[in-house]
Length: 288
Image (cartoon, rainbow, N blue to C red):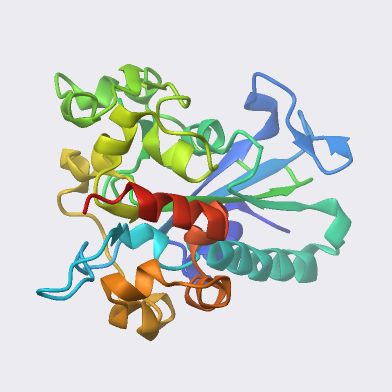
């Protein structure tokens, strides 16, 4: 018999830092999973993989500065999370006889991952619209697995239900956003968010270019100032070390980068989302 405790144990074995269970019958809207609807028919395992490592934000060398790449973007945490979820599902299939087509793995997908994370008890909505998990802060990626098996769902503390309620009077993220993209607690206006626009090759106004500043990829100002991220859980897994060539890049190297070098440097990085033309666009934004 497959139990909640067994599934959560699989997630822990796979290296996820925190996990929870949400029942599909608790969803307000039907959630599409593959070729069928999952409402009332199964469970979601929702897991967090920390993407925080104790490393400098600036990888450039003295007297040879170049643009910044946010630590979360220096390797592909999303791909790693999917790989770990596949191992969990493999163990579930062995135990239950389920087939591949019976489940669905998702990460950085169109499914409502943040609502599912909240429903599973993984964390609460911060005023920056991100899920904040005690002990992890918001510096993690969310991965999920749907299975057509009823498991006991995790209970959500009542004080977690209102976005930003746990944040109290703190408005650090809202005050720090250079473009005012957090329009009210828990509500992010994506058309203003620098990170959203940078990862999708959207146009920048002159004011947005100035706000973007000295970055190559990755804006996480609203996370940097969050008190819950002051002492987050960090990992030191070797597989998440930056590409060695990335550490050697100079300002000249960046401006002369080719698409082949881009593919090599960011093969396992979230920067691939912006594509080569997006990185070149961001290079043009950097203040000289």
